[in-house]
Image (tube, rainbow, N blue to C red; front, side, top):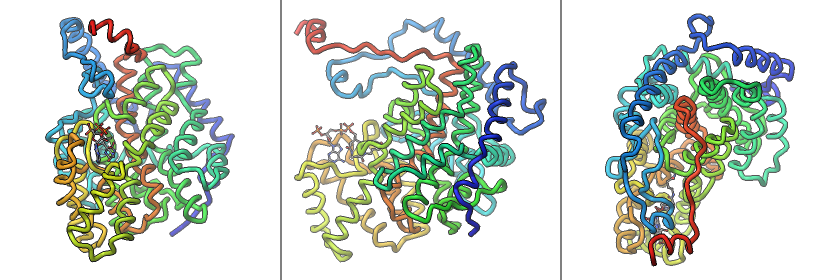
Length: 472
Ligand code: AMX
């Protein structure tokens, strides 16, 4: 596979200066549809049409129902992580406790069926899911191909970010490297630049959209650089203008198995969005509400994803599964496996990959990964272990009596698939989750700016004040 050094990928300072200059020119004029600008971005045109309609819809809805009550807040909700409080509007996806995620109304199986695929591929292209999330429409093959091309053309990393990545110590966790490098790319923010030059509020969405497209395009080379620096020889594979986003990512990571590329397409699609209240989505929305630019907002999102109760659980699951293999070997009995799970619980730890703050059934993101495994790696011992655990863990968690949801979530399955194709470095897994999560949280950020959502500032209270309020 052709390899190029990280430095080859970085644009020179001069090129960057020119593109920043162009960005400034664009930000000063009012929006001109792509067809008249002579370059491909029909997505932006589609989006602008949607926005005009949505802005009107929201304005009319708020005028008619602005004071209508939508729920109540209890003392337990305030101490209990605000579970169940309806306090956010997110357009891109909705999570049903029983059914799981729907992206703009489409379930995962529907997305797998309806979204465009790569030639010869069976899994949906994440570019299509992004189009769906941000516009609400299922895109055509041509529209998706256009996004792939556009992302490939925006993928160059600034030189100072390459240097930063190369200078990180190998002891720094991949997620810390990821979040730090994303924050450092803020130097390229078209939103920050336009804001400092006095851009009108009505144009914020457009600058946010441009940053979103740039940032999503740059995440695969950035993430690949972390991987290759930590676990390979520091050289990343060559990006090609003709490949889709996932195929380029797989190549840059150094993987040339077409099945791994298909896994990446599925993985990057299903990890993208989980409505607005989860930590990574909420963090991006919250920080973005201060008009921090998309780079800073997404860096905050990634700091949240790096927590073991959220995205880091995919790393925790693999650590836990490997430990069980070490303790039990491959010829374990059902009883031994149950004992291993109980030992985890009795030592005060959680069973990673199980439970959810909203879901009350098996996560459909787990199910589609299980189907992928049945198709491609039915005899893998680690997959068999995951399948066995699925049979016993829910009953144990029910007997344990604490977890509100005893069923597996997305993270219970993803690591096993990655490991099968040779990606054994589990501390890297959450970075892959993060690359995917950009599609959802940044789509929402564009809409936040289009709808003019204000600074987020809920009211907090002291226990003393709360006691007085409820006359305790
Ligand atoms: N194993 C053991 N105990 C669990 C558990 C699990 N998998 N899931 C929940 N519990 C415990 C909680 O720790 C809590 O105990 P406490 O009362 O002593 O504090 C109790 O059950 C009630 O918790 P809950 O209401 O069911 O869950 P929650 O909404 O507070 O938290 C979650 C949800 C995901 C953090 C939790 O289920 C958990 O820790 N799971 C394991 C980690 C994991 O898989 N995280 C990934 C989630 C998906 C994602 O974001 N990527």
